[in-house]
Image 1 (cartoon, rainbow, N blue to C red):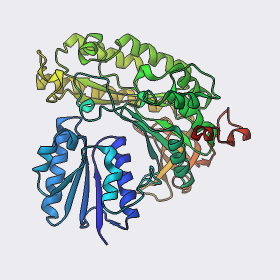
Image 2: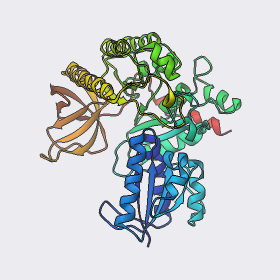
Image 3: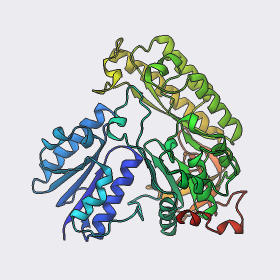
Length: 456
């Protein structure tokens, strides 16, 4: 029986695609092995969003080849798509998959006549990712992703709903909807499909993501939805109203990449809006929802970024009060316009600015966590505490870790608990109570599957 292991770098979409291959290999009768065990086949799913990601991918492949010289290594992912010739020269590489749409054909080449439609589980996870969209054409001047995932592809609504059903039936109580550019979901769907998706839902045209979310909410009420990264301008009024109407079904957490608080730098980045528009949308979200967790990506040291531009970024971050910051230093990517722009920022200045934002992010994180002290939160219980098995770690709906004390809850289940203590980076709660995440709009009548008409 062949033994295999899948290793993944990068985003939630990569993790979903790795899980798809993992399930296919298990259906073929392959045996999965863990870290430190010898495999006959290694699948490496690579990332290329930064130069560091490229290097990590190469380092991992070389390590596997050195430690397992007899094994076959299959490489896929964005780095493999962007630099296939470079990957082919690495030791041990037997096959390169440059197009993720060919994953079913790869499984067929191994003998699986009927590759799976989606996934049924997520290894070692209690939250399940569902990829609903692929591709990006935003054209940010620093980003290579449109070069490797340019084709916009949205999955059919009925296929997404079937996959969510399988995962919830398997016990998953949080479904994370993800894509390369999630807000582009539906723009490529045929008009007939878009009309069926909108049927029966009040709202203006052009909101396929919001329509899909509402169909999923109406379909069944025993799970919650979390949205992965969205551009702020793509948080439509309809989507925001859904989040307000279903506070226990849609996690009040949005990851909104800001990148810079300077409109001048945003324009050089090729972003599609000014800093004022980003700030206004964040303010609207905070006024509409109850203490939402807004998290973001911020880049420092973009070519031409002055001290004044950087201070605008600092001020924007302080004004919004993000719950968490992901801080990145600009990394020139060959083939992007930003790589050859004048006024490249010295590395020392980039490091200094990153340190300032990291410190600011820590302070804002602490402030947000403390603001939840005494709150009742919905939790997904994920792992037992290593030091005290009677306690467990959970993830709050607002994307904050919670240490639950007072009896071992069922792992993977949703519960509610009142926060009794807020530390610097975590919350502490006691005696989590099981719950069904039904929201204000749910009723027995909504157990009917309205999405079923989409198949017609």
